[in-house]
Image 1 (spheres, helix red, strand yellow):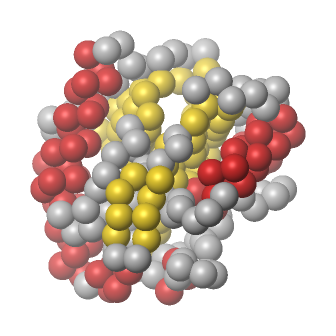
Image 2: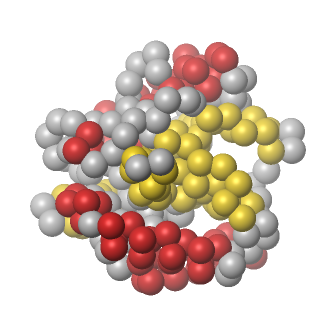
Amino acid sequence: MNIALAQINLTVGDFEKNALKILNFSWDAFRKGADLIVFPELSLCGYPPEDLLLKKAFIQEEMETLKKMIKGLPDFIVILGLAYPEKNFLYNSAGVIFKRELVALYHKINLPNYGVFDEKRYFEPGKEAMVLQVNESTFGIEICEDIWIENSVSEAQSFSGDAEIILNLSASPYHMGKGNIRQEILKNVAKKTKSQIFYCNLVGGQDELVFDGESMVIDEEGNLIA
């Protein structure tokens, strides 16, 4: 399979602009032969949306934008970040879109609540790791902090779900030396789980945060290959 990582700069609350970027990058990847594209965490609403998540109109607009955007996507697999409402709860989710339909949802299990992160204020934690079978490949889908917590989501996907590939949607802000820390964590998880890791991080700035991208692919032996 050909996997595309869309390391893009998103704007919090600008649903129309974010949706257009998702559409444009999806079509670009599709034309270049990708079978699947991965976008960063909370890609449709932007990161971090903070107290905008408490406004019903904000979530409603996101869902309406999603319905419209799906109709214009190419006929391949698109995995993007969503603030997704379900049964009176809000989740930090990864939506899996195939043939212009939302076919699966993964809800982030490990919600960071330290430093610049305040996710437990807004989101309900997910309860189950997700593994998908696509043709001959088995994928685990997770979001940012899920891969930082040891003996958690990545291990469940690999050891219980037989995932060969882990797709991580991330919005990990920069600080001095953060890139090296991320890379070491991903390498360790890859070696431990014997899985390939495709890590897609955000770029750009929001308030006091800077997102430095450094999206990467790590093979099952812990080697940086892209």
